[in-house]
Length: 305
Image (cartoon, rainbow, N blue to C red):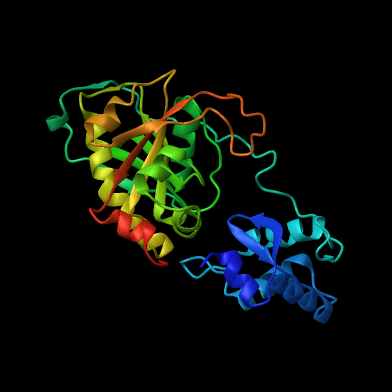
C-alpha cells in the first residue's frame, strides 16, 4: 500500500510540505499547533526540543534532531500551517563569517620512496580532537577546494607516517539523490529517504604535495574502508554499508579509486539539487561507489535500521 493510501485510511492528509525527507501531515500540524498553544511562553528552540521528544525524533546516537526540527517547523510556519512565536533573540550563526583555518607549519621535506618503506601507515580520526585544527589547516592550504565546515554526520582523518602527516580524508552524509547510484543500489525513493544515512560520502582526499609514493592513494583508500565503518559505528551508533565519492572529470581521472576497486557508476548531471532550469550549471563529476559488505543491498533496501 502506498503511504498516501495508508494515510487516507487513517484519515490523515498529506500536505504539500516535505522537509529533509519528512512528509508533513495534517496530524502533525495539529500536534504542533496544540504544543504551541499549551506552551505560550516557550521559545522556538524550546518548542522544537519538546516536539523532538514527542515524535521521538532522534539521531542514531540518541541526540535530538533539534536543528532539523526547527527547520521543519519554520517551513510549516512560512507556509501558513502553524504560527511560531516571535524570535526572542537571534544568536550569531557560527557558520556565517567563519574565519578560515590558520596555517600550521609542518615538515615539508620531500618523501619520495616506495610504499613498502613507509608502511605501516596510521589513520587517525581527528574530529573533536586536538588534531582537528591541523586537518582543517592542511585542507585549506593544499586541497583545491579549500576547507568548508561540514554539517550533519561527518568524520575527519589524517594519515601519518610516524609522526609526519602525509594526507587527509573527510567523510560526510551522502547526497540525497544521485541517479546512477540509486539505480545501482536498486532502491526506491522511500527506501532512499529511510536509509541514506547508511552511506558515507568521501568529500575530501588529499595527498600532501611533497609526498611522491606510487600506489599510496589506493593503499590509503583500501585501509580507509575498514576504518570508516568502525568509526562511524563508534561515533554515530550506526554502521555504514556503502561509500561514495564524486571525481571532477575536468581535473582527475579517478585512477586511485579504480585501483582500490571502487566501481564507476556514471556521471552527475551537472545541475544542483535545487536546479529548475534543466541546464548544466556546474562541472560534471564521475560517481564512484564502494560496497562495504556483500549484502549491502539487503541493508539499504531492507527494513528500517
